[in-house]
Image (cartoon, rainbow, N blue to C red):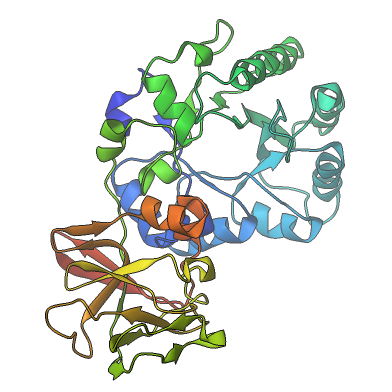
Length: 379
């Protein structure tokens, strides 16, 4: 849907960092590559190397931290570096001038500029120094792209977005004036991309046309700031599922879990589910959250612990059996417990819920209702 909606000449750069937002980066990237994704973006070198091991041959942009000790792996893996500070650019130039970095093809880089997010990124005042370093590399560093990230793109009327666009225009103009011709210009995360597709005037620019957009959460779930109707077109791609391990009935007055935070007000039937905050069930859901069992929302009873969650199933017509499905977010039959609803109950955002699903939770890949793959960090 997203690719079909993009302006002519604009392409996707899917963001598959944080293990594909918890979905399993290798499988997500392979699926997107099969569907024609021309390039991918990750946060760190290790994530890019994981995609290489999974058979991804497309360019992979590393958008975040790149340490000196990682430069050899970055070059060997054919990854594209971002340049976000003078010091980091100096490290890359020195590496390429050293014995280990000599020879081979030029290293492609994307200049990451800070236009107002105030995180990683080159400030406008430092851009000339960066360009001097690139020019002094004698062709060993090739400036392929320039990019930035909007801070408030989920609020289309926020003046910060227009201010960032203006700053980006100034920086890009400077880059062009120095003779560089970057072919990849990308500024839009999921919210900015969808706002642009809705023809938000704050994203229009007379100086540059973006070549790529960087959908992240939009590939997997929902995007803040959109209308309910627009959000409904973005189906959750993942359900977080465990099972009932044990069922027990306790009398009124029974304290449940650490600190006895839950006290049974009546004879209460409890289901013990083997998933806790080490697996991605936020501890902040204690006393607030619910899970789907037998297609109904059942409240959590007491505090979420590291490996287990206790659920009050008293109001179910039939007690669940050992092995019955318990859904922390996602679909169960016709019932849905959305990741956005879970995030709201936990006092956070859906990104954190998705990325928080731990590595010991297997990823079971479905296609057409059938299991086509099972990926586990421990198998």
